[in-house]
Image 1 (cartoon, one colour):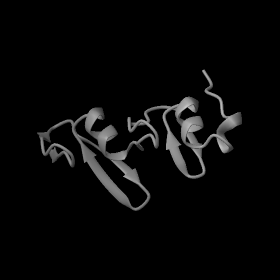
Image 2 (cartoon, rainbow, N blue to C red; image 1 turned 90 degrees about the horizontal axis):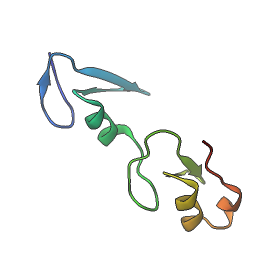
Image 3 (cartoon, rainbow, N blue to C red; image 1 turned 30 degrees about the horizontal axis):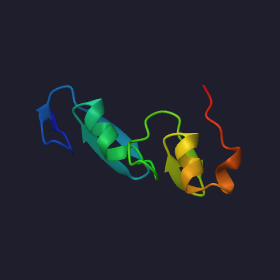
Length: 80
C-alpha cells in the first residue's frame, strides 16, 4: 500500500509514474492529471491528450494557442 502524492490517500491499488529522474505515486488518474499534466497557457485547464505546443508553452487546443501566439500559431490546427 502506498500514499498518493496529491491527496494523501493510502490505497492498495496505487500506481507510480516515472518522469525523468522522479517517481510520483497516485491513487487515481484524477490525482495524476492534477500533478503531471501541463496547464493551458491561455485558459488554465489541464491539457489531457493531444495539446498544442508553441514556443515551449502548452495549450489545450489550437484556438487557445492562436489567442496567445497569433503570429506563430496562425498555422496551428487541431487534429482529430
